[in-house]
Image 1 (cartoon, rainbow, N blue to C red):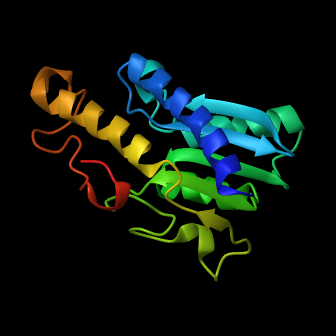
Image 2: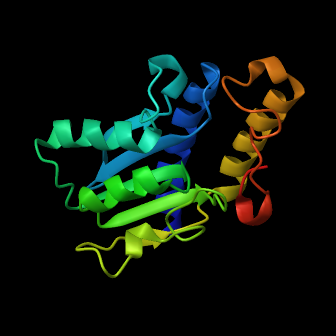
Length: 176
């Protein structure tokens, strides 16, 4: 796909990320696309659902599988504003997604090229094509703003130990 097409879908993922921010969750959004149409979209809902697995990617993959009637998401692409963690990268591999497109890198928890590269691990039975850096600045800025506001208001850190919320570096479009 072209960079322009990637940007269109990542804009949609950014809109989802803003919905997460509206309910005080880390602003990450995800969109699953197949054949030029949105199959599913979601945003982080860990705070709302009190569920550590309610990441945008997991919710979008579940909704896509339901919509398509199959856990195999052949022919789909996942667009996500932040590099997936190990849980989400594992789900991407297990869903047999051919393509992952993400915005900001996550050097402290990313599992699609930064800290780990689970999605391209040669010992696994499926590898994913990865496109990085699509609207990375916009994605990173949204995350940095969120974490800066949390640091400014320590009472707003739901369950975080002092000094740990939002400690990701800002390098390469990552979050700070």
